[in-house]
Image 1 (cartoon, rainbow, N blue to C red):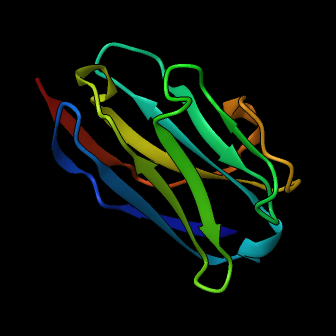
Image 2: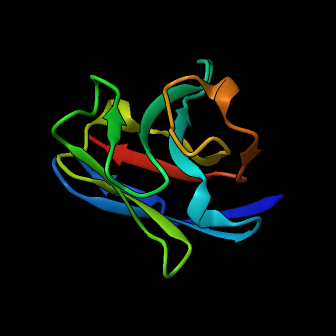
Length: 124
């Protein structure tokens, strides 16, 4: 089993940037696809972005496309989410997750391991 620990959340300003990190340990990180999801108060968890095991294929929710970038460094067992041009509606708890097939995808059901999350709050 892989263990995931997110960091980098905090308070951002509208139009500003934050970078989230997710450090993995345990099961071979390099063979897993990784995803970022978020959940705002009173709302369901939603897909944000995913990246396949080798980093050659990425997927984004329409709401973040063009503003967020997912990347990974397999030498550091870490996946990143660079968030630019932040908006108040980006306020949520952000979770990283591991998907064992290595392909990634938008459905939370594909992911078998989740981190504890990191809070992102964007002020207007």
